[in-house]
Length: 336
Ligand code: EPU
Image (cartoon, rainbow, N blue to C red):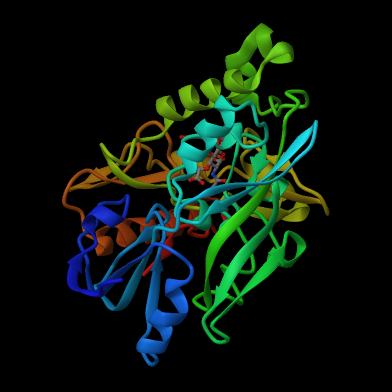
Protein backbone atom coordinates (compact mmCIF):
# COMPACT_ATOMS: atom_id res chain seq x y z
CA UNK A 1 0.00 0.00 0.00
CA UNK A 2 1.77 3.13 -1.23
CA UNK A 3 0.43 6.62 -0.69
CA UNK A 4 1.10 8.72 -3.80
CA UNK A 5 1.01 12.52 -3.89
CA UNK A 6 -0.54 15.05 -6.30
CA UNK A 7 -2.18 12.60 -8.66
CA UNK A 8 -4.41 13.66 -11.57
CA UNK A 9 -7.94 12.25 -11.26
CA UNK A 10 -8.85 12.80 -14.92
CA UNK A 11 -8.60 9.10 -15.82
CA UNK A 12 -10.52 8.13 -12.66
CA UNK A 13 -13.80 9.92 -13.45
CA UNK A 14 -15.99 9.11 -16.46
CA UNK A 15 -16.75 12.84 -16.99
CA UNK A 16 -13.02 13.21 -17.77
CA UNK A 17 -12.66 16.29 -15.54
CA UNK A 18 -9.20 17.44 -14.49
CA UNK A 19 -8.75 17.56 -10.68
CA UNK A 20 -5.81 16.71 -8.44
CA UNK A 21 -5.77 14.39 -5.41
CA UNK A 22 -3.41 15.63 -2.68
CA UNK A 23 -2.86 11.97 -1.71
CA UNK A 24 -3.91 8.82 -3.55
CA UNK A 25 -3.86 5.19 -2.45
CA UNK A 26 -5.18 2.05 -4.09
CA UNK A 27 -6.84 -0.48 -1.76
CA UNK A 28 -6.59 -4.10 -2.92
CA UNK A 29 -7.96 -5.90 0.13
CA UNK A 30 -10.13 -5.00 3.10
CA UNK A 31 -7.27 -6.03 5.44
CA UNK A 32 -5.38 -2.90 4.29
CA UNK A 33 -8.06 -0.59 5.65
CA UNK A 34 -7.43 -0.75 9.46
CA UNK A 35 -3.71 -0.22 8.83
CA UNK A 36 -4.33 2.79 6.61
CA UNK A 37 -6.59 4.39 9.23
CA UNK A 38 -4.17 3.65 12.09
CA UNK A 39 -1.32 5.30 10.23
CA UNK A 40 -3.33 8.34 9.06
CA UNK A 41 -5.55 8.99 12.06
CA UNK A 42 -6.51 12.59 11.44
CA UNK A 43 -6.64 12.57 7.67
CA UNK A 44 -9.83 13.08 5.73
CA UNK A 45 -10.50 10.45 3.11
CA UNK A 46 -12.45 10.51 -0.11
CA UNK A 47 -13.62 7.20 -1.56
CA UNK A 48 -13.33 6.76 -5.27
CA UNK A 49 -15.23 3.91 -6.85
CA UNK A 50 -15.50 3.69 -10.61
CA UNK A 51 -15.81 7.50 -10.74
CA UNK A 52 -18.93 7.11 -12.87
CA UNK A 53 -21.36 9.13 -10.81
CA UNK A 54 -19.37 12.16 -9.76
CA UNK A 55 -18.42 15.59 -10.93
CA UNK A 56 -15.24 17.25 -9.68
CA UNK A 57 -15.49 21.03 -9.37
CA UNK A 58 -12.29 21.37 -7.30
CA UNK A 59 -9.10 19.58 -6.31
CA UNK A 60 -9.39 17.01 -3.52
CA UNK A 61 -7.25 17.97 -0.54
CA UNK A 62 -7.70 14.54 1.12
CA UNK A 63 -6.48 10.98 0.81
CA UNK A 64 -8.32 9.59 -2.19
CA UNK A 65 -8.95 5.84 -1.79
CA UNK A 66 -9.32 3.93 -5.01
CA UNK A 67 -11.19 0.72 -4.21
CA UNK A 68 -9.70 -2.21 -6.16
CA UNK A 69 -10.81 -5.12 -3.93
CA UNK A 70 -11.39 -8.03 -6.32
CA UNK A 71 -12.85 -11.54 -6.13
CA UNK A 72 -15.95 -13.63 -6.79
CA UNK A 73 -16.87 -16.26 -4.23
CA UNK A 74 -19.61 -18.84 -4.53
CA UNK A 75 -21.27 -18.88 -1.10
CA UNK A 76 -24.18 -21.23 -1.71
CA UNK A 77 -25.79 -23.01 -4.62
CA UNK A 78 -29.11 -24.81 -4.92
CA UNK A 79 -31.07 -26.14 -7.90
CA UNK A 80 -32.71 -22.76 -8.43
CA UNK A 81 -30.41 -20.12 -7.11
CA UNK A 82 -26.90 -19.06 -6.34
CA UNK A 83 -25.41 -16.80 -3.69
CA UNK A 84 -22.35 -14.87 -4.85
CA UNK A 85 -20.03 -12.63 -2.82
CA UNK A 86 -18.26 -10.11 -5.03
CA UNK A 87 -15.36 -7.80 -4.19
CA UNK A 88 -16.29 -4.10 -4.29
CA UNK A 89 -13.63 -3.27 -6.85
CA UNK A 90 -14.88 -5.65 -9.56
CA UNK A 91 -16.17 -3.88 -12.66
CA UNK A 92 -19.98 -3.97 -12.68
CA UNK A 93 -20.52 -4.67 -16.39
CA UNK A 94 -17.87 -7.42 -16.43
CA UNK A 95 -19.75 -9.09 -13.57
CA UNK A 96 -23.04 -8.82 -15.49
CA UNK A 97 -21.42 -10.40 -18.57
CA UNK A 98 -19.97 -13.23 -16.46
CA UNK A 99 -23.38 -13.93 -14.88
CA UNK A 100 -25.05 -14.01 -18.30
CA UNK A 101 -22.40 -16.44 -19.60
CA UNK A 102 -23.07 -18.70 -16.60
CA UNK A 103 -26.83 -18.41 -16.96
CA UNK A 104 -27.33 -16.65 -13.62
CA UNK A 105 -30.37 -14.40 -13.97
CA UNK A 106 -31.17 -11.18 -12.14
CA UNK A 107 -28.83 -8.44 -13.28
CA UNK A 108 -28.90 -8.72 -17.09
CA UNK A 109 -31.10 -5.57 -17.29
CA UNK A 110 -28.28 -3.68 -15.56
CA UNK A 111 -25.77 -4.29 -18.37
CA UNK A 112 -23.37 -1.53 -19.45
CA UNK A 113 -23.85 0.55 -16.31
CA UNK A 114 -20.40 2.03 -15.72
CA UNK A 115 -18.74 1.77 -12.32
CA UNK A 116 -17.71 -0.84 -9.77
CA UNK A 117 -19.70 -3.37 -7.76
CA UNK A 118 -19.18 -1.54 -4.44
CA UNK A 119 -20.64 1.69 -5.79
CA UNK A 120 -23.76 0.03 -7.19
CA UNK A 121 -25.74 -0.18 -3.89
CA UNK A 122 -24.91 3.41 -2.88
CA UNK A 123 -27.27 4.89 -5.43
CA UNK A 124 -29.23 1.64 -5.89
CA UNK A 125 -28.42 1.47 -9.62
CA UNK A 126 -31.41 0.72 -11.76
CA UNK A 127 -32.39 0.33 -15.39
CA UNK A 128 -35.14 -1.26 -17.50
CA UNK A 129 -37.33 -2.32 -14.59
CA UNK A 130 -34.62 -3.74 -12.28
CA UNK A 131 -32.68 -2.25 -9.37
CA UNK A 132 -29.75 -3.82 -7.50
CA UNK A 133 -31.95 -3.92 -4.38
CA UNK A 134 -33.99 -6.69 -6.09
CA UNK A 135 -31.05 -9.13 -5.90
CA UNK A 136 -28.85 -7.81 -3.08
CA UNK A 137 -28.91 -10.00 0.03
CA UNK A 138 -26.31 -8.17 2.10
CA UNK A 139 -23.13 -6.16 1.92
CA UNK A 140 -19.93 -5.82 3.91
CA UNK A 141 -19.09 -2.36 5.26
CA UNK A 142 -15.86 -1.16 6.83
CA UNK A 143 -16.72 1.49 9.40
CA UNK A 144 -14.21 4.35 9.76
CA UNK A 145 -15.08 5.02 13.40
CA UNK A 146 -14.93 1.47 14.79
CA UNK A 147 -12.35 0.35 12.17
CA UNK A 148 -14.27 -2.90 11.92
CA UNK A 149 -16.33 -4.61 9.24
CA UNK A 150 -20.06 -5.06 9.64
CA UNK A 151 -22.75 -6.75 7.55
CA UNK A 152 -25.79 -4.79 6.32
CA UNK A 153 -28.89 -6.76 5.32
CA UNK A 154 -30.95 -5.57 2.36
CA UNK A 155 -33.45 -3.89 4.73
CA UNK A 156 -30.69 -2.12 6.64
CA UNK A 157 -29.47 -0.52 3.39
CA UNK A 158 -32.79 1.46 3.29
CA UNK A 159 -32.94 1.41 -0.49
CA UNK A 160 -35.09 3.87 -2.44
CA UNK A 161 -35.12 5.25 -5.98
CA UNK A 162 -31.42 6.03 -6.66
CA UNK A 163 -30.99 6.16 -2.89
CA UNK A 164 -29.71 4.26 0.16
CA UNK A 165 -28.51 4.89 3.71
CA UNK A 166 -24.94 5.12 2.30
CA UNK A 167 -25.89 8.25 0.35
CA UNK A 168 -27.47 9.85 3.42
CA UNK A 169 -26.66 9.14 7.12
CA UNK A 170 -23.59 7.02 6.37
CA UNK A 171 -22.11 9.24 3.65
CA UNK A 172 -18.33 9.42 4.18
CA UNK A 173 -18.49 7.12 7.26
CA UNK A 174 -17.12 3.93 5.72
CA UNK A 175 -16.52 1.78 2.67
CA UNK A 176 -18.44 -1.04 1.02
CA UNK A 177 -15.86 -3.82 0.63
CA UNK A 178 -18.04 -6.65 -0.77
CA UNK A 179 -21.59 -7.29 -1.97
CA UNK A 180 -23.59 -10.55 -1.81
CA UNK A 181 -26.18 -11.15 -4.53
CA UNK A 182 -28.75 -13.87 -4.96
CA UNK A 183 -29.25 -14.80 -8.60
CA UNK A 184 -31.62 -17.31 -10.21
CA UNK A 185 -30.53 -20.30 -12.20
CA UNK A 186 -33.93 -20.55 -13.82
CA UNK A 187 -34.41 -18.31 -16.83
CA UNK A 188 -38.07 -17.79 -16.17
CA UNK A 189 -39.51 -14.52 -14.89
CA UNK A 190 -37.08 -12.29 -16.75
CA UNK A 191 -37.90 -8.57 -16.71
CA UNK A 192 -38.99 -7.70 -20.21
CA UNK A 193 -41.93 -5.38 -19.57
CA UNK A 194 -40.06 -2.05 -19.74
CA UNK A 195 -41.41 -0.44 -22.93
CA UNK A 196 -38.07 -0.06 -24.76
CA UNK A 197 -37.08 -3.68 -23.97
CA UNK A 198 -40.48 -5.03 -25.00
CA UNK A 199 -40.36 -3.09 -28.26
CA UNK A 200 -36.87 -4.27 -29.13
CA UNK A 201 -37.58 -7.94 -28.30
CA UNK A 202 -40.82 -7.81 -30.31
CA UNK A 203 -42.39 -11.23 -30.90
CA UNK A 204 -39.56 -12.90 -28.97
CA UNK A 205 -40.39 -11.25 -25.63
CA UNK A 206 -42.15 -14.32 -24.21
CA UNK A 207 -39.40 -16.77 -25.06
CA UNK A 208 -36.43 -14.47 -24.35
CA UNK A 209 -33.42 -15.98 -22.59
CA UNK A 210 -31.00 -14.18 -20.28
CA UNK A 211 -28.58 -13.33 -23.09
CA UNK A 212 -31.45 -11.99 -25.27
CA UNK A 213 -32.37 -9.51 -22.54
CA UNK A 214 -28.69 -8.66 -22.01
CA UNK A 215 -28.11 -8.08 -25.74
CA UNK A 216 -31.27 -6.00 -25.98
CA UNK A 217 -30.31 -3.78 -23.07
CA UNK A 218 -26.79 -3.36 -24.52
CA UNK A 219 -28.26 -2.41 -27.90
CA UNK A 220 -30.65 0.18 -26.39
CA UNK A 221 -27.98 1.72 -24.17
CA UNK A 222 -25.41 1.87 -26.97
CA UNK A 223 -27.94 3.66 -29.16
CA UNK A 224 -29.17 6.14 -26.56
CA UNK A 225 -26.31 6.79 -24.15
CA UNK A 226 -22.81 8.11 -24.81
CA UNK A 227 -19.87 5.75 -24.17
CA UNK A 228 -17.77 7.44 -21.45
CA UNK A 229 -14.56 6.30 -23.14
CA UNK A 230 -15.57 8.40 -26.16
CA UNK A 231 -17.57 11.30 -24.65
CA UNK A 232 -17.19 12.24 -20.98
CA UNK A 233 -20.43 11.80 -18.99
CA UNK A 234 -21.84 10.36 -15.78
CA UNK A 235 -25.05 8.79 -17.08
CA UNK A 236 -28.26 10.47 -15.95
CA UNK A 237 -27.24 13.79 -14.47
CA UNK A 238 -30.67 14.35 -12.89
CA UNK A 239 -33.15 12.09 -11.12
CA UNK A 240 -36.67 11.70 -12.45
CA UNK A 241 -38.82 13.88 -10.17
CA UNK A 242 -41.60 12.25 -8.15
CA UNK A 243 -44.48 14.65 -7.56
CA UNK A 244 -47.84 14.58 -5.78
CA UNK A 245 -50.98 13.65 -7.72
CA UNK A 246 -52.29 17.19 -7.07
CA UNK A 247 -49.24 18.79 -8.65
CA UNK A 248 -49.42 16.29 -11.50
CA UNK A 249 -53.07 17.19 -12.21
CA UNK A 250 -52.11 20.85 -12.38
CA UNK A 251 -49.16 20.32 -14.74
CA UNK A 252 -51.17 17.90 -16.89
CA UNK A 253 -53.80 20.59 -17.31
CA UNK A 254 -51.22 22.90 -18.92
CA UNK A 255 -49.21 20.16 -20.70
CA UNK A 256 -51.66 17.33 -21.56
CA UNK A 257 -48.99 15.31 -23.38
CA UNK A 258 -46.69 15.00 -20.31
CA UNK A 259 -45.49 11.38 -19.86
CA UNK A 260 -45.85 9.90 -16.37
CA UNK A 261 -45.49 6.69 -14.34
CA UNK A 262 -47.72 6.07 -11.34
CA UNK A 263 -45.89 5.26 -8.11
CA UNK A 264 -47.23 3.78 -4.92
CA UNK A 265 -48.83 6.18 -2.37
CA UNK A 266 -50.45 8.21 -5.18
CA UNK A 267 -47.22 9.87 -6.32
CA UNK A 268 -46.30 10.29 -9.96
CA UNK A 269 -42.84 9.98 -11.57
CA UNK A 270 -42.12 12.28 -14.50
CA UNK A 271 -39.22 11.65 -16.92
CA UNK A 272 -36.79 14.53 -16.37
CA UNK A 273 -35.49 13.95 -19.92
CA UNK A 274 -38.89 15.01 -21.27
CA UNK A 275 -39.00 18.15 -19.09
CA UNK A 276 -35.46 19.09 -20.22
CA UNK A 277 -36.19 18.39 -23.88
CA UNK A 278 -39.42 20.43 -23.78
CA UNK A 279 -37.47 23.27 -22.19
CA UNK A 280 -35.33 23.36 -25.34
CA UNK A 281 -32.06 21.93 -24.00
CA UNK A 282 -31.69 18.64 -25.88
CA UNK A 283 -28.56 18.83 -28.06
CA UNK A 284 -27.56 22.21 -26.58
CA UNK A 285 -23.79 22.86 -26.61
CA UNK A 286 -21.67 25.64 -25.11
CA UNK A 287 -17.93 25.21 -25.55
CA UNK A 288 -17.18 21.63 -24.50
CA UNK A 289 -20.28 21.25 -22.31
CA UNK A 290 -23.53 19.92 -23.67
CA UNK A 291 -26.81 18.06 -23.30
CA UNK A 292 -26.52 14.76 -25.16
CA UNK A 293 -28.53 14.91 -28.41
CA UNK A 294 -29.95 11.39 -27.98
CA UNK A 295 -30.85 11.50 -24.25
CA UNK A 296 -31.61 14.83 -22.62
CA UNK A 297 -30.94 13.51 -19.11
CA UNK A 298 -27.22 13.18 -19.81
CA UNK A 299 -24.78 16.11 -19.64
CA UNK A 300 -21.57 15.61 -21.58
CA UNK A 301 -17.98 16.83 -21.69
CA UNK A 302 -16.93 17.02 -25.34
CA UNK A 303 -13.28 17.54 -24.40
CA UNK A 304 -11.84 20.03 -21.96
CA UNK A 305 -14.93 21.13 -20.00
CA UNK A 306 -14.42 22.03 -16.35
CA UNK A 307 -16.61 20.88 -13.50
CA UNK A 308 -17.71 24.49 -12.92
CA UNK A 309 -18.92 24.80 -16.53
CA UNK A 310 -20.94 21.60 -16.22
CA UNK A 311 -22.51 22.59 -12.92
CA UNK A 312 -23.37 26.05 -14.31
CA UNK A 313 -25.26 24.43 -17.20
CA UNK A 314 -26.98 22.00 -14.81
CA UNK A 315 -28.23 24.92 -12.70
CA UNK A 316 -29.53 26.79 -15.76
CA UNK A 317 -31.43 23.66 -16.80
CA UNK A 318 -32.92 23.26 -13.31
CA UNK A 319 -34.08 26.90 -13.28
CA UNK A 320 -35.55 26.72 -16.75
CA UNK A 321 -37.46 23.47 -16.03
CA UNK A 322 -38.78 24.92 -12.79
CA UNK A 323 -39.99 28.13 -14.39
CA UNK A 324 -41.74 26.30 -17.26
CA UNK A 325 -43.28 23.39 -15.34
CA UNK A 326 -43.01 24.35 -11.65
CA UNK A 327 -41.14 21.05 -11.11
CA UNK A 328 -37.80 20.81 -9.30
CA UNK A 329 -35.32 18.33 -10.78
CA UNK A 330 -32.57 17.17 -8.43
CA UNK A 331 -29.09 16.16 -9.47
CA UNK A 332 -28.30 12.45 -9.35
CA UNK A 333 -24.57 12.94 -9.73
CA UNK A 334 -22.35 13.60 -6.68
CA UNK A 335 -20.89 17.08 -7.01
CA UNK A 336 -17.60 17.72 -5.23
N1 EPU B 1 -37.52 11.16 -22.94
C1 EPU B 1 -37.56 12.38 -23.58
N2 EPU B 1 -36.42 12.86 -24.16
C2 EPU B 1 -35.24 12.16 -24.13
C3 EPU B 1 -35.20 10.91 -23.49
C4 EPU B 1 -36.36 10.43 -22.89
O1 EPU B 1 -38.59 13.03 -23.64
O2 EPU B 1 -34.25 12.69 -24.64
C5 EPU B 1 -38.73 10.68 -22.24
C6 EPU B 1 -39.60 9.76 -23.07
O3 EPU B 1 -40.94 10.05 -22.74
C7 EPU B 1 -39.22 8.38 -22.56
C8 EPU B 1 -38.97 8.67 -21.09
O4 EPU B 1 -38.36 9.96 -21.09
O5 EPU B 1 -40.27 7.48 -22.74
C9 EPU B 1 -38.10 7.67 -20.39
O6 EPU B 1 -36.86 7.58 -21.07
P1 EPU B 1 -35.86 6.35 -20.82
O7 EPU B 1 -36.59 5.06 -20.92
O8 EPU B 1 -34.67 6.56 -21.69
O9 EPU B 1 -35.47 6.49 -19.28
P2 EPU B 1 -35.11 7.73 -18.35
O10 EPU B 1 -36.21 7.92 -17.37
O11 EPU B 1 -34.70 8.90 -19.16
C10 EPU B 1 -34.03 6.12 -16.56
C11 EPU B 1 -32.75 6.02 -15.77
C12 EPU B 1 -31.61 5.52 -16.65
C13 EPU B 1 -32.00 4.15 -17.17
C14 EPU B 1 -33.32 4.28 -17.95
C15 EPU B 1 -33.84 2.93 -18.40
C16 EPU B 1 -32.95 7.72 -14.04
C17 EPU B 1 -32.44 9.03 -13.52
N3 EPU B 1 -32.43 7.32 -15.20
O12 EPU B 1 -33.83 7.11 -17.59
O13 EPU B 1 -30.46 5.38 -15.82
O14 EPU B 1 -30.99 3.62 -18.01
O15 EPU B 1 -34.34 4.85 -17.10
O16 EPU B 1 -34.33 2.24 -17.29
O17 EPU B 1 -33.77 7.08 -13.40
C18 EPU B 1 -28.47 6.40 -15.03
O18 EPU B 1 -28.97 6.38 -13.91
O19 EPU B 1 -27.32 6.88 -15.24
C19 EPU B 1 -29.25 5.93 -16.17
C20 EPU B 1 -28.82 6.03 -17.44
